[in-house]
Image (cartoon, rainbow, N blue to C red; front, side, top):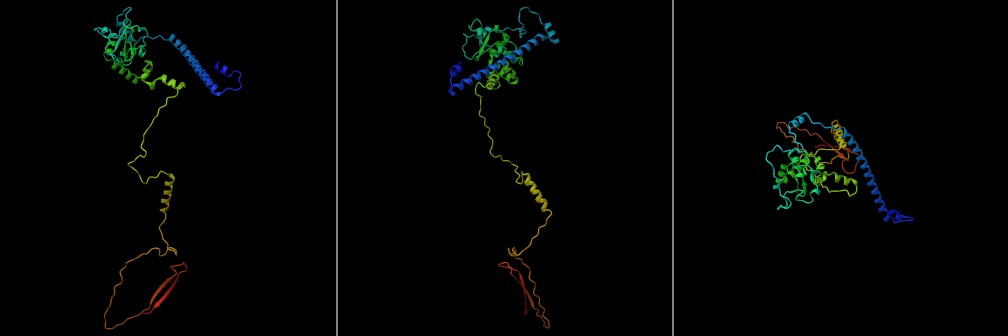
Length: 322
Protein backbone atom coordinates (compact mmCIF):
# COMPACT_ATOMS: atom_id res chain seq x y z
CA UNK A 1 0.00 0.00 0.00
CA UNK A 2 2.87 2.40 0.74
CA UNK A 3 4.48 1.64 -2.63
CA UNK A 4 1.21 2.06 -4.46
CA UNK A 5 0.56 5.37 -2.72
CA UNK A 6 4.12 6.53 -3.34
CA UNK A 7 4.45 5.49 -6.99
CA UNK A 8 0.87 5.76 -8.21
CA UNK A 9 0.83 7.24 -11.71
CA UNK A 10 4.07 9.18 -11.42
CA UNK A 11 6.62 9.03 -14.21
CA UNK A 12 9.70 9.23 -11.98
CA UNK A 13 10.15 8.64 -8.26
CA UNK A 14 13.32 9.23 -6.16
CA UNK A 15 15.11 5.95 -5.56
CA UNK A 16 15.99 6.98 -1.99
CA UNK A 17 12.30 6.63 -1.15
CA UNK A 18 11.39 3.61 -3.29
CA UNK A 19 14.35 1.26 -2.85
CA UNK A 20 14.05 0.88 0.96
CA UNK A 21 10.37 -0.03 0.63
CA UNK A 22 11.11 -2.60 -2.09
CA UNK A 23 13.85 -4.07 0.12
CA UNK A 24 11.49 -4.30 3.11
CA UNK A 25 8.81 -5.90 0.93
CA UNK A 26 11.29 -8.49 -0.38
CA UNK A 27 12.44 -9.33 3.15
CA UNK A 28 8.85 -9.79 4.32
CA UNK A 29 8.09 -12.05 1.38
CA UNK A 30 11.22 -14.13 1.99
CA UNK A 31 10.44 -14.53 5.70
CA UNK A 32 6.84 -15.50 4.93
CA UNK A 33 7.99 -18.05 2.36
CA UNK A 34 10.43 -19.61 4.84
CA UNK A 35 7.74 -19.71 7.50
CA UNK A 36 5.36 -21.45 5.09
CA UNK A 37 8.04 -24.03 4.30
CA UNK A 38 8.70 -24.59 8.00
CA UNK A 39 4.98 -25.05 8.70
CA UNK A 40 4.68 -27.50 5.84
CA UNK A 41 7.65 -29.52 7.13
CA UNK A 42 6.22 -29.51 10.66
CA UNK A 43 2.87 -30.70 9.32
CA UNK A 44 4.52 -33.62 7.55
CA UNK A 45 6.54 -34.45 10.67
CA UNK A 46 3.40 -34.33 12.79
CA UNK A 47 1.60 -36.75 10.48
CA UNK A 48 4.57 -39.16 10.57
CA UNK A 49 4.71 -39.01 14.37
CA UNK A 50 0.95 -39.60 14.62
CA UNK A 51 1.29 -42.67 12.41
CA UNK A 52 4.20 -44.00 14.50
CA UNK A 53 2.30 -43.31 17.70
CA UNK A 54 -0.57 -45.46 16.55
CA UNK A 55 1.79 -48.40 15.95
CA UNK A 56 3.98 -47.96 19.04
CA UNK A 57 3.05 -50.09 22.06
CA UNK A 58 5.90 -50.13 24.62
CA UNK A 59 6.22 -53.11 26.90
CA UNK A 60 8.23 -53.81 30.02
CA UNK A 61 11.15 -56.21 29.96
CA UNK A 62 11.06 -59.46 31.90
CA UNK A 63 13.11 -57.98 34.76
CA UNK A 64 10.81 -54.99 34.89
CA UNK A 65 7.76 -57.19 35.11
CA UNK A 66 9.32 -59.13 37.98
CA UNK A 67 10.13 -55.94 39.90
CA UNK A 68 6.69 -54.51 39.24
CA UNK A 69 5.07 -57.69 40.54
CA UNK A 70 7.01 -57.41 43.81
CA UNK A 71 5.96 -53.76 44.31
CA UNK A 72 2.72 -53.34 46.30
CA UNK A 73 -0.01 -51.68 44.30
CA UNK A 74 -1.38 -48.41 45.68
CA UNK A 75 -4.46 -46.92 44.14
CA UNK A 76 -4.39 -43.15 43.64
CA UNK A 77 -0.92 -42.69 45.15
CA UNK A 78 2.21 -41.72 43.25
CA UNK A 79 5.19 -44.03 43.50
CA UNK A 80 8.07 -41.92 44.80
CA UNK A 81 11.66 -42.53 43.98
CA UNK A 82 12.84 -42.46 47.59
CA UNK A 83 9.89 -44.08 49.34
CA UNK A 84 12.16 -46.82 50.64
CA UNK A 85 13.74 -44.33 53.04
CA UNK A 86 12.14 -44.28 56.44
CA UNK A 87 13.10 -40.81 57.71
CA UNK A 88 10.56 -38.18 56.57
CA UNK A 89 11.50 -34.70 55.30
CA UNK A 90 9.86 -31.55 56.62
CA UNK A 91 9.58 -29.04 53.78
CA UNK A 92 8.42 -26.33 56.17
CA UNK A 93 12.04 -25.87 57.26
CA UNK A 94 12.81 -24.38 53.85
CA UNK A 95 12.20 -20.63 54.14
CA UNK A 96 9.44 -18.97 52.16
CA UNK A 97 9.46 -15.58 50.42
CA UNK A 98 8.46 -13.78 53.65
CA UNK A 99 11.00 -15.59 55.84
CA UNK A 100 14.14 -15.02 53.78
CA UNK A 101 16.92 -13.05 55.44
CA UNK A 102 19.69 -13.78 52.93
CA UNK A 103 19.04 -12.61 49.37
CA UNK A 104 21.19 -15.46 47.97
CA UNK A 105 19.39 -18.28 49.81
CA UNK A 106 17.01 -20.81 48.26
CA UNK A 107 13.30 -19.95 48.67
CA UNK A 108 10.34 -22.36 48.49
CA UNK A 109 7.31 -20.93 46.72
CA UNK A 110 3.87 -22.49 47.10
CA UNK A 111 0.31 -21.57 46.25
CA UNK A 112 -0.29 -20.31 49.78
CA UNK A 113 2.70 -17.99 50.15
CA UNK A 114 3.08 -16.63 46.58
CA UNK A 115 0.33 -15.03 44.50
CA UNK A 116 1.87 -15.60 41.05
CA UNK A 117 2.62 -19.28 41.65
CA UNK A 118 0.60 -20.51 38.67
CA UNK A 119 2.45 -18.18 36.27
CA UNK A 120 5.98 -19.08 37.31
CA UNK A 121 8.30 -20.00 34.40
CA UNK A 122 9.89 -23.34 35.28
CA UNK A 123 13.54 -23.71 34.35
CA UNK A 124 15.16 -26.90 33.08
CA UNK A 125 11.89 -27.71 31.28
CA UNK A 126 10.33 -28.81 34.58
CA UNK A 127 12.74 -31.72 35.13
CA UNK A 128 14.13 -32.62 38.54
CA UNK A 129 17.68 -31.29 38.89
CA UNK A 130 18.49 -33.55 41.82
CA UNK A 131 17.57 -36.70 39.89
CA UNK A 132 19.55 -35.51 36.85
CA UNK A 133 22.69 -35.13 38.94
CA UNK A 134 22.36 -38.08 41.33
CA UNK A 135 21.17 -40.63 38.75
CA UNK A 136 23.67 -39.82 35.97
CA UNK A 137 21.48 -37.95 33.53
CA UNK A 138 18.06 -39.46 34.30
CA UNK A 139 15.29 -37.02 33.32
CA UNK A 140 12.32 -37.20 35.67
CA UNK A 141 9.55 -34.55 35.65
CA UNK A 142 9.27 -32.52 38.84
CA UNK A 143 6.17 -32.31 41.00
CA UNK A 144 4.98 -28.67 41.31
CA UNK A 145 2.64 -29.72 44.13
CA UNK A 146 5.68 -29.92 46.40
CA UNK A 147 6.51 -26.30 45.63
CA UNK A 148 8.91 -24.38 43.43
CA UNK A 149 12.39 -23.46 44.64
CA UNK A 150 13.72 -20.07 43.55
CA UNK A 151 17.49 -19.63 43.54
CA UNK A 152 19.78 -17.36 41.51
CA UNK A 153 16.89 -16.26 39.30
CA UNK A 154 15.87 -19.83 38.41
CA UNK A 155 12.71 -21.69 39.32
CA UNK A 156 13.20 -25.42 39.89
CA UNK A 157 10.81 -28.24 40.69
CA UNK A 158 11.69 -31.62 42.17
CA UNK A 159 10.30 -35.13 42.05
CA UNK A 160 10.61 -35.87 45.78
CA UNK A 161 10.69 -34.00 49.05
CA UNK A 162 14.17 -35.25 49.91
CA UNK A 163 15.48 -34.05 46.55
CA UNK A 164 14.16 -30.56 47.28
CA UNK A 165 15.69 -30.52 50.77
CA UNK A 166 19.12 -31.69 49.56
CA UNK A 167 19.08 -29.13 46.75
CA UNK A 168 18.29 -26.27 49.13
CA UNK A 169 21.19 -27.30 51.38
CA UNK A 170 23.81 -26.78 48.61
CA UNK A 171 22.27 -25.47 45.37
CA UNK A 172 25.56 -24.29 43.82
CA UNK A 173 26.86 -27.85 43.75
CA UNK A 174 23.83 -29.09 41.81
CA UNK A 175 23.99 -26.23 39.31
CA UNK A 176 27.67 -26.95 38.73
CA UNK A 177 26.90 -30.65 38.27
CA UNK A 178 24.22 -29.77 35.71
CA UNK A 179 26.78 -27.78 33.73
CA UNK A 180 29.21 -30.71 33.84
CA UNK A 181 26.45 -33.04 32.63
CA UNK A 182 25.77 -30.66 29.72
CA UNK A 183 29.46 -30.67 28.83
CA UNK A 184 29.50 -34.48 28.74
CA UNK A 185 26.13 -34.80 26.97
CA UNK A 186 25.50 -31.70 24.81
CA UNK A 187 21.96 -32.81 24.01
CA UNK A 188 20.94 -31.66 27.50
CA UNK A 189 21.59 -28.04 26.45
CA UNK A 190 18.51 -28.06 24.21
CA UNK A 191 16.42 -30.48 26.26
CA UNK A 192 16.79 -28.38 29.41
CA UNK A 193 16.75 -25.03 27.58
CA UNK A 194 19.98 -23.69 29.09
CA UNK A 195 21.10 -21.81 25.99
CA UNK A 196 22.14 -18.71 27.93
CA UNK A 197 24.82 -20.72 29.75
CA UNK A 198 26.23 -22.09 26.47
CA UNK A 199 26.02 -19.29 23.87
CA UNK A 200 28.30 -21.02 21.35
CA UNK A 201 26.19 -24.19 21.40
CA UNK A 202 22.84 -22.45 21.19
CA UNK A 203 20.74 -23.44 18.16
CA UNK A 204 18.73 -20.23 18.48
CA UNK A 205 21.83 -18.04 18.13
CA UNK A 206 23.01 -20.09 15.14
CA UNK A 207 19.62 -19.86 13.41
CA UNK A 208 19.39 -16.12 14.04
CA UNK A 209 22.86 -15.68 12.61
CA UNK A 210 22.01 -17.70 9.49
CA UNK A 211 18.64 -16.05 8.94
CA UNK A 212 20.21 -12.75 7.94
CA UNK A 213 17.86 -10.69 10.08
CA UNK A 214 20.77 -9.43 12.14
CA UNK A 215 24.32 -8.66 11.23
CA UNK A 216 26.72 -11.56 11.25
CA UNK A 217 28.69 -11.85 14.45
CA UNK A 218 32.36 -11.24 13.83
CA UNK A 219 35.34 -11.77 16.07
CA UNK A 220 38.96 -10.65 15.85
CA UNK A 221 41.36 -13.56 16.07
CA UNK A 222 45.12 -13.17 16.31
CA UNK A 223 47.91 -15.72 16.34
CA UNK A 224 51.46 -14.75 17.30
CA UNK A 225 54.34 -16.68 15.80
CA UNK A 226 58.10 -15.91 15.64
CA UNK A 227 59.28 -14.14 12.53
CA UNK A 228 62.34 -16.33 11.96
CA UNK A 229 62.50 -19.79 13.44
CA UNK A 230 65.92 -20.69 14.82
CA UNK A 231 66.85 -24.27 14.05
CA UNK A 232 69.60 -25.95 15.98
CA UNK A 233 70.50 -28.36 13.18
CA UNK A 234 71.23 -26.05 10.26
CA UNK A 235 72.92 -27.75 7.32
CA UNK A 236 75.02 -25.21 5.48
CA UNK A 237 75.40 -27.45 2.44
CA UNK A 238 71.66 -28.03 2.04
CA UNK A 239 70.26 -27.13 -1.35
CA UNK A 240 66.52 -27.16 -2.04
CA UNK A 241 66.62 -26.43 -5.75
CA UNK A 242 66.49 -29.66 -7.73
CA UNK A 243 67.98 -28.05 -10.84
CA UNK A 244 70.95 -26.81 -8.81
CA UNK A 245 71.48 -30.30 -7.41
CA UNK A 246 71.31 -31.74 -10.92
CA UNK A 247 73.87 -29.23 -12.16
CA UNK A 248 76.27 -30.04 -9.33
CA UNK A 249 75.89 -33.79 -9.93
CA UNK A 250 76.69 -33.41 -13.64
CA UNK A 251 79.64 -31.19 -12.80
CA UNK A 252 81.11 -33.73 -10.35
CA UNK A 253 80.59 -36.58 -12.81
CA UNK A 254 82.32 -34.60 -15.55
CA UNK A 255 85.31 -33.65 -13.36
CA UNK A 256 86.06 -37.27 -12.48
CA UNK A 257 86.75 -38.02 -16.12
CA UNK A 258 89.28 -35.19 -16.60
CA UNK A 259 92.88 -34.43 -15.51
CA UNK A 260 94.36 -31.09 -14.54
CA UNK A 261 96.91 -29.67 -17.02
CA UNK A 262 98.60 -26.29 -17.48
CA UNK A 263 99.94 -24.63 -20.61
CA UNK A 264 102.19 -21.62 -20.91
CA UNK A 265 101.57 -19.40 -23.87
CA UNK A 266 103.10 -16.21 -25.18
CA UNK A 267 100.52 -14.20 -23.24
CA UNK A 268 100.86 -16.03 -19.93
CA UNK A 269 104.64 -16.46 -19.50
CA UNK A 270 106.53 -14.88 -16.62
CA UNK A 271 103.33 -13.81 -14.91
CA UNK A 272 104.57 -15.13 -11.63
CA UNK A 273 108.08 -15.07 -10.07
CA UNK A 274 109.37 -18.46 -8.95
CA UNK A 275 112.53 -19.11 -6.99
CA UNK A 276 114.31 -22.41 -6.45
CA UNK A 277 117.16 -23.02 -4.00
CA UNK A 278 119.67 -25.72 -4.96
CA UNK A 279 123.04 -26.90 -3.70
CA UNK A 280 125.94 -25.69 -5.86
CA UNK A 281 128.55 -28.29 -7.00
CA UNK A 282 131.59 -28.63 -4.76
CA UNK A 283 134.95 -27.34 -5.94
CA UNK A 284 137.54 -30.13 -6.05
CA UNK A 285 141.25 -29.77 -6.73
CA UNK A 286 144.13 -32.21 -7.04
CA UNK A 287 147.84 -31.32 -6.69
CA UNK A 288 150.13 -33.43 -8.90
CA UNK A 289 153.62 -33.08 -10.27
CA UNK A 290 152.27 -32.38 -13.69
CA UNK A 291 150.01 -29.47 -14.28
CA UNK A 292 147.57 -29.89 -17.07
CA UNK A 293 144.44 -28.05 -17.95
CA UNK A 294 141.85 -27.56 -20.62
CA UNK A 295 140.01 -24.46 -21.65
CA UNK A 296 136.84 -25.49 -23.41
CA UNK A 297 134.60 -22.84 -24.82
CA UNK A 298 131.39 -21.94 -23.04
CA UNK A 299 128.13 -21.73 -24.96
CA UNK A 300 125.31 -19.40 -23.95
CA UNK A 301 121.85 -19.13 -25.46
CA UNK A 302 119.78 -15.96 -25.22
CA UNK A 303 116.07 -15.79 -26.06
CA UNK A 304 114.76 -12.56 -27.49
CA UNK A 305 111.15 -11.41 -27.88
CA UNK A 306 109.90 -12.58 -24.50
CA UNK A 307 109.22 -9.13 -23.05
CA UNK A 308 107.60 -6.01 -24.32
CA UNK A 309 105.44 -5.98 -27.38
CA UNK A 310 104.41 -9.37 -28.69
CA UNK A 311 106.74 -10.52 -31.48
CA UNK A 312 108.27 -13.74 -32.67
CA UNK A 313 110.74 -15.32 -30.29
CA UNK A 314 114.38 -15.73 -31.51
CA UNK A 315 117.27 -17.71 -30.05
CA UNK A 316 120.81 -16.22 -30.08
CA UNK A 317 123.74 -18.60 -29.43
CA UNK A 318 126.98 -17.06 -28.06
CA UNK A 319 130.37 -18.79 -27.69
CA UNK A 320 132.85 -17.60 -25.10
CA UNK A 321 136.51 -18.66 -25.05
CA UNK A 322 138.00 -18.15 -21.62
